[in-house]
Structure formats: structure tokens, C-alpha cells
Image 1: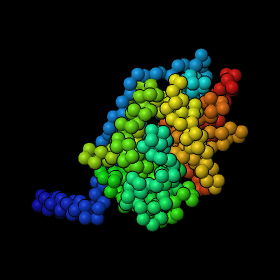
Image 2: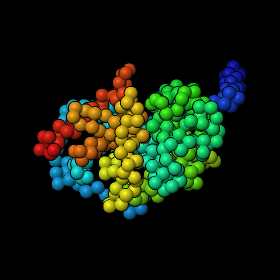
Image 3: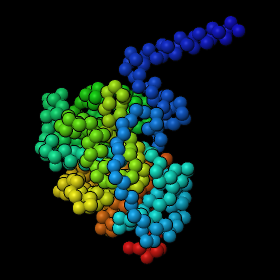
Image 4: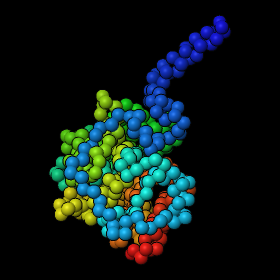
Length: 387
């Protein structure tokens, strides 16, 4: 019994020392990471982890439900699609044709109204909010220096960094996009309760505006720029600019770093559902017009859906770009395989949400599951004579 008590005391002492060490080394965010992710058996963020974090509500107003297509849900999934959905844990798969829901299915206990984490699909919303801030006159253009809003980046190479560089992922900062390393800045930003401090620690090490390098920190910094330019919280600006005007059926949640700092995780983490996410694909498909009203400048959208750098044809400003056969798709894309995929010429929107995506192969920009979700959707439509 004495040995047991002594052991418990030593374990308590070790635990206290470990916690103290985390605070001394400024890695105390790992306590939150352990509590919300690692001790629950996950090695990275997961679909419903928004419930473990502080959030701000993005309210809807007058819901505008998607109409159902005249051939709604008359098709069945192909065998390859069924297998992929089962293997990768799809929870929502929706095909919208000619602005009507042609097919939808939900899995694993989720339904059409279930909220799940957007992850990096949120980057497309933030880029759009940049376009809206330019349209509203808060920001001059894509060429306005970041240092006009964040003076700390007004020296050296940072002085050349523009808001357009942030939207096109070409800031030149030393951000390291590593999801599975507990000590990476990406992990720190997900769990730290002071995102402002994290971003202010970045260094501009390469010439901005010269090359694409995917970096969530670029979008986080862009969110800070938009808040300072508009003097509005990002979640409020999203509410008034898009969530309400687009007739979203449900309110949504946007994660913040903490109640005290109330900084939106701009690079990720809007909790919503497949058909409300799809509205943003329709807005860009229709060049910013919704119900006859121009919500976003069409020229900004055209630029957003065009590669900025010829060496990186897969990315524009906040949107991924993919050619498959003779078709050109643009998409919102998030961790673990969250996708809103749009083919404007065919007037098709495909939404897939789920627990996993296919493995990423070195040298390939897109995982194989994306091609599967596209090709099988078209096979389903072709089987019913839909073109």
C-alpha cells in the first residue's frame, strides 16, 4: 500500500513538472491537443471536433432550399462509388445539376442537416471576403500591401507582400504545413488560444508573389487583414455578405481560438452541411450573382478561378483548379476529403464530405478519390440520359 501511494505521488509530481515544462517552452497548446484530439484516439483533427472548441455563430435568415430535380434520386450509386464511400467513410454525397438536387445520400448516421468541419474549404470563403472587402471599398485592390493593415510586416521582404499574395498562397513566409506533427506551426495554430501571437511570429523568408506554396498561415493572416480593414469580425462579415444573402438553410459555426481573443480560425473550421456548402460553388459558377443581385464582383471571381502562376496551374485565389479529360473543374477542398467540385459548363456541383481522403502520392497535387467522385457522378448522370 505504501509503495502504491508513493508511486501515485511520484506520478503527480511528474505530471506537474510536465505541465510546467510545456508552459515554460510555450508548448502548452499540446494540453488542449491531447484533451480534444489525441486522448480521444485521433492523430489529427476530425469531422465533429468543432464541438470541442469555442465557436461563433454565423446566422442564416430566410432559407432558400434547393429545389429537387425532376429526376431526383432516381439513380443509384455505381459500384466503384459505393466502395469508395465505404472505404473512405463518406458521410454526404450530393450531385446538383442545373441548380437542382439530382442525387443525395448520407451515411454513418449523418443527415442533410448534420454539421461537420469544413477544414480548408473555409479558405475559399475568406478569399471571397477579400473580394467583398475590395468591392465595398475597405481594401483598395489585390495589390495593396499587407503592411497597411499589419505594420509588423512592413520591413524587408515583408514590405512587398500584398493581400493578393495571401489569397494566392505566395506570401513567402516560413509557415510549415504539417498536420500530423504535434510541434508544427499548423498544429499550434489549431490549438493555441492566441492566433494573433502565432501569426506575428512568422518570418518572410522568400520573395512574396513569386511562387505558390500552400500555407494555411497565409489565409489566417488574410483574415486578420480583412478584420482590420472592415473593423468587423470575420464571422459577422461572412454572415452579412454571404451566409444570409445566399439563403442558407441552417446557421453555422466558425471556430475561434478562444473566448478571450475571439480570433477566427480563418484557414479552416466552418461547421456546416453539404447543401449549404454547395451554395458557394453556385455563387462562383454564376460569377457572383444570386437571385439577380451581384454579391461579388465577376471580374474578381474570374481572376480567382485562373492560375496565378503558370508553374502551379492547380491554384488560383482561394480555389483549387483541376482538369479532367475535356472538363475544367474548380473546387473548395478541405482536410480528410471535404470537397465542393464545380463544372460550370455542365452546370454540375458535386459535394463530398467524409472521414478520410485517398492517400496522397508524392508529386501529385490531387488525390485519386477526387477523380472518382467526379467520374462516377458523370456515369450516374449518363445512365439516366442526363448531360
